[in-house]
Amino acid sequence: MTLISKYSQSDQLPRGEACTSRRVSHVDALLQYGLVSSGQVDALTDIGRSFDIGISPHILKLLSGRNADLRDDPIAKQYIPAAEENTILPDEEGDPIGDEIYSPVRGIVHRYPDRVLLKVSSVCAVYCRYCFRKEMIGQGAEHMSADDLDDAISYVRDNPQIWEVILTGGDPFMLSARRLQNVLDRLGAIDHVQIVRIHTRIPVASPSHLSETHLSVLKGFSKAVHVVIHVNHRDEVTEEVQEKILALRTANCSVLSQSVLLNGVNDNAKTLEDLFRFLVAHHVRPYYLHHLDRAKGTSHFRVPLKRGQEIMRELQGRVSGICLPKYMLDIPGGHGKIPVHDGYVHHRDGDIYQVSDYQGCTHLYFENMPDATSSVHMQEAK
Image (cartoon, rainbow, N blue to C red):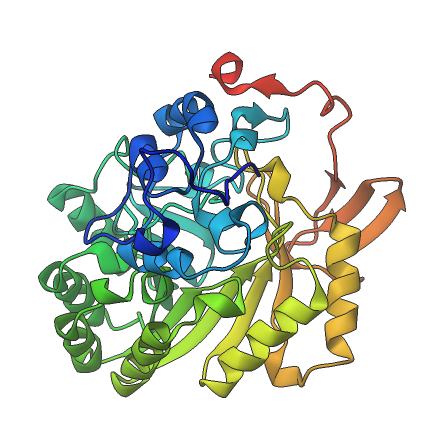
């Protein structure tokens, strides 16, 4: 990760002034706010053509108060693009967990019998550099039309085995409160839907997006709502974030968390211990710790599966059970999520593992594909 910590160029603002009322979405703005160097502009401009850039005012303010060199900063690495994203390995894909093959109608992913994903938004308040849907969201993504939503709701209504609907995207809280209420009202009218889950980064990365009107909509919903916030590091849980967590609980929502194990961000037991304990102390239940999915341009974030298992063993002995999420691997190719423990994951040889999916089928999982040393540049991979 090549970021700068010195701001001597005349076209840059000191990092302490790096705050704005608008989201930063272009490389020139990153340069202006001292988050990248002029020498990085060409490489990052190439990245911006394929993967959206988005840093919220909240994250800009958080970064402006960081004393660390941003090249090593666990918050900056999650949001600021780096030249490493120009490297695409052969095992990286645009749809690394196989959503498309389980999509019977636009916006629905029905991989497991009793639950579906409903992708109600194609935009986010921020664009995480490791996102597994980084090529499916943002400015170039197709937005869900009113007809698409009608078809998706009809699909849920016509399949009585669906007990839970998971709102995702993009970020569901990017919807206006009116549109969110429309979606919830229509799901609430389906008898067999008992749970609505909302996967979101907004309470952590852009708390102001979650308005009092959104919260009123959630509080007025007739069925159980579980909000799963995406957070990777203790330093992301600012006072503003804590206030939104409390507001969600006051709105009768259960609040859980999911995190991604990321090289240079949280790939040690102490960092995760601090995060999980702090979350539990604020009534947030750590739910999943995800092994990184192989989206394009994310190899610099990879943590070996063996190292992830070691970290979980360390945590097992040092934190309460209520602080421990499940360490999960999404098997490439659409075979579903599995917990990373001996019942599902078996080391065979070198960097090769045999993994069993939830249906009992076995697959080979490679830490590195045999030809992964022959990486390609982004432009060659398109």
